[in-house]
Length: 525
Image: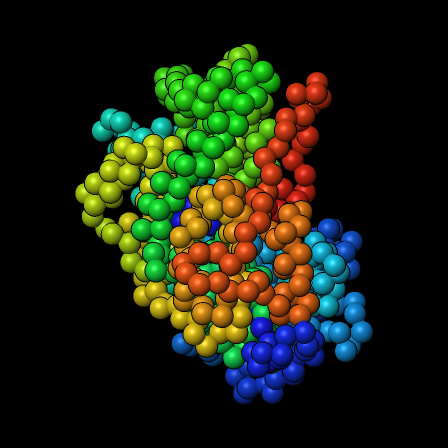
């Protein structure tokens, strides 16, 4: 899945409205040591009063006395009186591969000061960020001048096979034994180790994108340990991971057409076409032109990657539009290059998120090894959804050669889980809304909020009062929207609004803000 990048005793008994003081758990004999908290190295976390530490956990939980690895953990403590305290809440930004240490700051974005009742716990999952070891394989993998994604000639296909096979080999050399222990179930065990080290009987959990799958698996394995759980951008656990990527391809084609229509609406600003069809034609013409002659390093693969951000979020629509307009109308690729560099910084260790993404998804379950199946499936989808299909295929192609031993996907079952809040927008492409409906059925006490007709992925706590106030109410009291009959959402909200170009008033588009950068981290790539 490209980028995709818990409930109180009182609630379980039906007494909504009670607050819960965290119960201290008796440490087991093989329990991890308590986390030693100290100052955070990260300046932003430090300025917010966060504490940071490292937790030692087994590399292989089947060998608890064997090699240990370190999980980086952060904490911003509750500021309410003891009788209002709701316990700890862990946050995962998704990916897999997203660094989550900074997510301890998420609580300040919860309305009605409901976040202040919790200790917010961020953590870098195993292999990620400041956890050790950190998995990186090839700093140059996402550099410029890559082949076009669509394998329109045997030479292009051969080039991508060579590139993806070499990346898998580099990760085998860099990862070693770590690659056999990077499955979702391993991170779920790490979450349980964090809970034990914190000395609490229950945790709450806030997961974005892939983080929703972590939450589902944790709630399946440890339902009695869940206090409250918010899952935003919900993964379908029955389609991990090969099939889910094909689902994404169809969904991204729909979402990018919504963006093309928005560009056409503001043709007076961007001059890309007066109809969605005209803008779409312009886009594919530019892909072809860049395949023949890249512009300042921007080829068709790089252009697709920049546009993919518009398929994820409405937040950066103006930036992508201005950069593409400059290419089309001025032959100026500088804006596109800047956006590409933001997503793919050419620095040491820049492939950490991607390497971990593969390490998790390639081993959660076995992928097809026969390229004929990949080619058949992806060409079939490409015919109706050309925007992202082959980009997604090559993104995941190293799984054909991955060194880690594959496992079996967990059969997610929320029958014993307490009430869970699910969130998604109708046209979310990274985690199609069908997945949210599936999880709603698997978790019979859950409730689903739908941002109707929206295309934004995992956009909660971004200012949509209808959604964000429901999150606040749930975190404060356990109250969920009333569950309705049928296979549909339980509450409908307006989606994250589409922007109105500032350039329509003669002003420059605003730069990417820190909240948008956080949201891009949630994407996991």
